[in-house]
Amino acid sequence: MITSLLRKYLLLYCCLFLFVACIDEDEYDDNPQGNFEALWKIMDEHYCFFSDKQIDWNAVHQKYQRQIDAGMTQSQLFEVLANMISELKDGHVNLYTSFDIARNWSWHENYPSNFSDTLITHYLGTDYKIASGLRYKTLDDNIGYVRYASFTSAIGNGNLDDILMDLAPCRALIIDIRDNSGGTLTYAEKFAARFTNEEMLVGYMRHKKGKGHDDFSDYEEQILKPSKNIRWQKPVFLLTNRQVFSAANEFVKYMRCCPKVTIIGDQTGGGAGLPFSSELPNGWLVRFSACPMYDRDKKSTEYGIQPDHRVSLLQSDLLRNRDTIIEYARALVK
Image 1: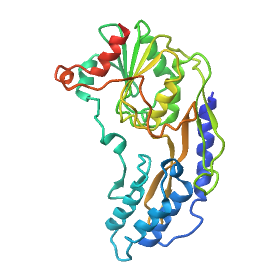
Image 2 (image 1 turned 60 degrees about the vertical axis):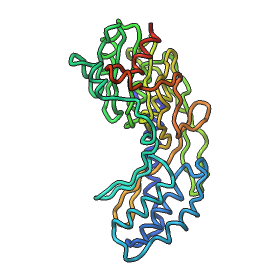
Image 3 (image 1 turned 180 degrees about the horizontal axis):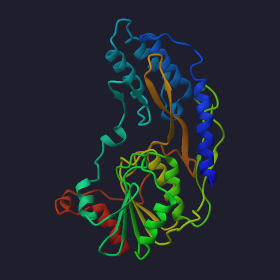
Image 4 (image 1 turned 90 degrees about the vertical axis):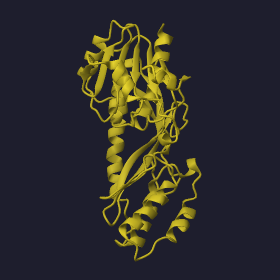
């Protein structure tokens, strides 16, 4: 059965599909000026964080319109358009072409990674188990460890039942989502539903209902319902870093509402705008944040979520094949 939170997401996607079909009400010529105006207009009417980020989009238009020339090459046009949307400083805003992708990764590039694939390989060894996109094992101190690298990897109830059943004798569970930059929100909800025994408010969502920068719907509740399958009843330690983004950021938002969950590591990267896409006259695809999401206190998580315990990966530990953040979680169990 589809949960209420999932049903809202599906309804929202359907509404957005109808919404985007009407985005290009004004027709623009397929030339540098036409593509520039089309991109600026799409963002002007449908991007959701102008007021939150205090961006003067009209001033941005004036700044970059002067750089448009009828004789410019496709690469030159791409550079101008990419620079224009980079003013938004949003990891969900991208311009896709056949030769490059405009992106803003400052949400994690300007910070320590606090993660090492080499260390994860050391902790997992060669005898770990795999269930869809999750790797898991019992560590030598009887603590369960689950590595979920991307919410693009599908998980089913059967996968989660098998994992939790296998780790049931463990006295605590470590869930490592560091470097998980997102994917599908329904997987985040499905996983989080294993860590609550009652319905709970985990946040809110709004969507654009008009072309004005502040034309939003009322706050719509996000309710997490407990799974009808196996649920975990012992302590949980969720490991995060700056590259936790988008759907993974939402997962952290859900989990911090669950009892017995402690978040350890670095602040997440954010990404609280549900992304959607449109097309320019020349066929280039633009993706942008269309629907803002908030925590249960109606505070935006666009800029990330703070951990309960801020812990950094130490170079001295790295040289000894020790993951400072994993070891901190294990110490809390002890």
